Length: 95
Image (cartoon, rainbow, N blue to C red; front, side, top):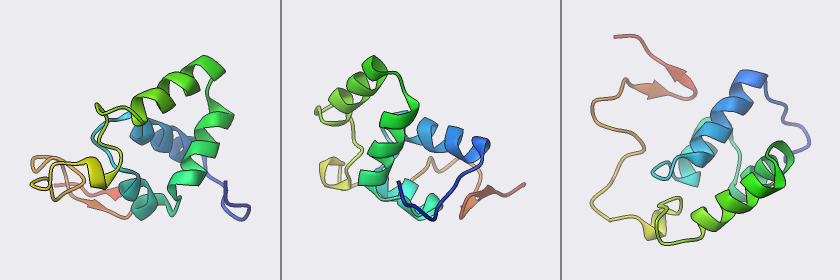
């Protein structure tokens, strides 16, 4: 993980949640938290049980996950559902 970057418990939970979600690409985590894929992997390795980390890595590298934009359907051009509230940086705006 980046040495000069520390996260609150809430931010850490959100990064882990986003990493687990199949449809959330690593680029979305980079956009919101400034954390590149290699640092997300380090963060997951340090915060998950070994078996959970191994399961996550296996899923990310399988054809099921769309964590990499290159593997995504080119028709998907957004990080989030069109019905989800607007996200600016890491803050969810109220309607």
